[in-house]
Length: 172
Image (tube, rainbow, N blue to C red; front, side, top):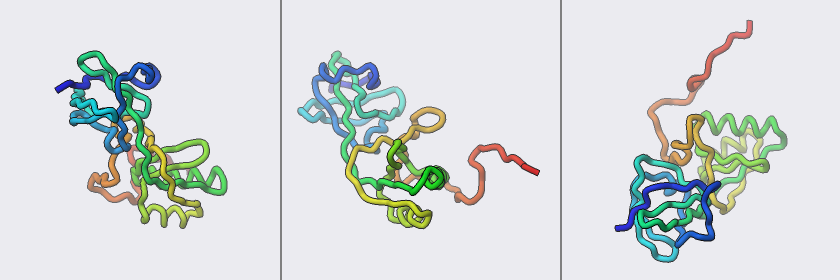
């Protein structure tokens, strides 16, 4: 089977020369090894040395030299708005504290559909409505290896008042 062995990031990819494309949601764009079928029927094995997040517009380099364009599939998401910048900061903080995969744009914050989170955000005064669009969650602070943590993300601890590696400062 033909293998995709490298990623050509979107800043360097030339979509016009791609032999095919593959359309994937955000969860399916974080992979190391998986059999895929392109939108025009090209079958290939994604076979990377380590898991990587595939961004909309990246190209996969096949071992025969052809390129496959990566497209982000539309997904059902929540679009979150607040009345002001402080409200948006509070929304972002609460989502980050819960390690929620989040896309932050100048106009809105986007998250996966989760009714519990929607109720929490509305309780903070945010406006939440469902949309369908490609989801491009932010990468982690140490690279984008965690960009597509699934909605089932769990790491076995509660999120009370711990600092997640931040330094604690006293302001006496």
